[in-house]
Figure (cartoon, rainbow, N blue to C red):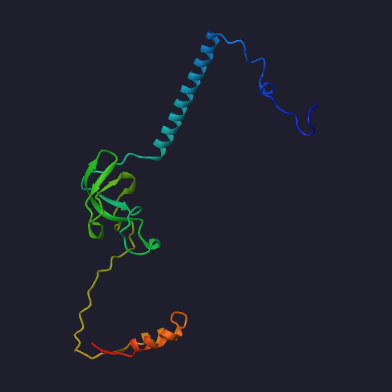
Length: 193
């Protein structure tokens, strides 16, 4: 008697009996293997063709030449100073020194990036297009003028440092026991420059 609540499924229940030849011979087994091999080759070719079409649609072959101006992505740069939120996504422009087939470009780094390796992959490079008056006709470049230096006589500037008192008054940072020693270390100091 079957247990109440579920009926066990055997492997023979899921097989379609009219599709299976239980008595396999060598010739029927070879036919099955040939069909499987043909189906797998066709599936691999279809997947390769689909991936190639997608890659060709998205990616373009770069047409950089030597002495072109390019911008370099700062995605992997760790030596740029400042908060990440405000850093530029591309820096440059840099001159292309040489091409390494179609995969990489060697650029001439300058400024704070001189210590960076000059060979960069194509995926981190984009061409530089200078913004001129044709693109922005209403933008007038303002000439930079350096203000004249003010000649001032040597004046005594007095500055009081209240650092010790403000540090003592903040009880969260110092305990009451150390407040006396800190107060003696940071007393009022007048500095003349």
